[in-house]
Image (cartoon, rainbow, N blue to C red):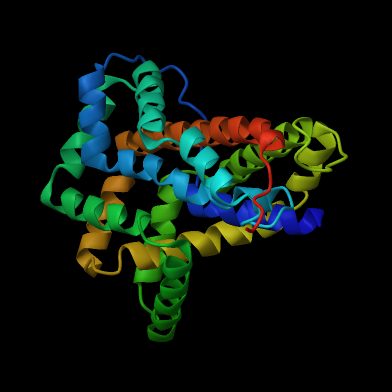
Length: 282
């Protein structure tokens, strides 16, 4: 049971997070105002990415070993409350205000406000709203076709994932989200997990080989689906933009913001699981 639960958690968080996560940038000198940050979120599409975290939360009961639909509408109401998009975006604004300097905000707005940037944001926003199963199935088909054609797009997709952070940090971030969620769920009496925090963390880290493969495969499939309508040249130009030092700093911060919001919300959700009652059929 425990291994099945961990597999479900890994699948959920791979859907919700970028192929790479990082910690907050150190030594930044914040100075951007909140209106400018909200403009940045809208132009870059990061507001949509944050709001879409709520979709993955609907799988929550399965993460503690319960049937996904066991709590029915009670679960849906709780997830909608804890993962309220507007509140998560407000939290993102608070975090970005604290750590991101104005020049990085400007850099992000300039690129994502360009013709290519707007096209990229449009396809990314559309992908966030597609059901996970559809994105996965269609993405896998596209990857198979690209492999058969020996398309250079695959190398570009891999480089895109690498440019926004390291897989090692992604693994550590996913593990910490899992630990915080499961320990809070156990404290709330929502799961029969009988293991200490450090042992749990060690058990999860022991699976980092599997996590690494899953992250890399998921990133490739997600990119193949999301950017399927972009031309080869547009992909190359986008990769070039992602590899600039300033854009890498932007993603360092955005990844950290996304991680912290996810970890905080799942931890909050887990503390309330013990009060949820299974929904009975009439």
